[in-house]
Image (cartoon, rainbow, N blue to C red):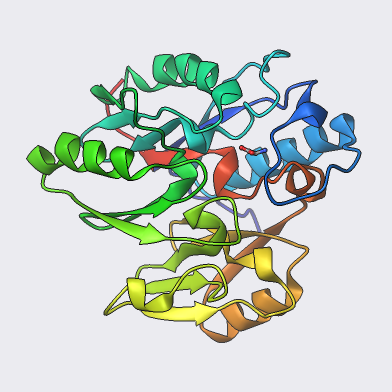
Length: 267
Ligand code: GLY
């Protein structure tokens, strides 16, 4: 019998950027430097991109830049909402030139706003839940950035809520959305009471880095190095799509960092 497959719906656009040959010289804040196999990192990144495509993302792949070691982590360069995109001003000076290529990729899809000096903000510190943006106050993201973001976005009906984080790089190292009404978090790095009224699930304590998952269309992408937390997610009814990320994890990267996913429209 002939099987008929429904055409894959491309509900989402995902901006990604190829792994830089200089990834081994990336910024590190909470990890010791370990050798990174760039060829393997590229293969793992390609697997991640293929998974995004299988979840209904149309990819916009930006080329690698040998002078920008961290540029694969595109999430930190912008915050993309339905109405507008805000170009970030990353906290690490080495990462600020990353924003130009990403702004160029986003311009056909959204009007662009920009954070300005002295604010510093990494997109990894911004958790969007409906009309609320939780902004992690981290070594990369300043209170001035939370203020600026609030002023830029209040005309669009968004509220900004600053959140303390400790012990990890970004707010989204500590907490991410694992479903329409479920947050996955590590209570050692962020206080669950910062998200009143939200259902929360804690990572397995043996897997502190597992709180970073990427929710797309009712499924979540999660590194396959966190099987215990995967079991917790599945017990909560979440469908997990594992991906091998070991080399990008050595660069203090995670699954949300490697893409900017937004609802397809425009262009
Ligand atoms: N290596 C990721 C970052 O520090 O921004």
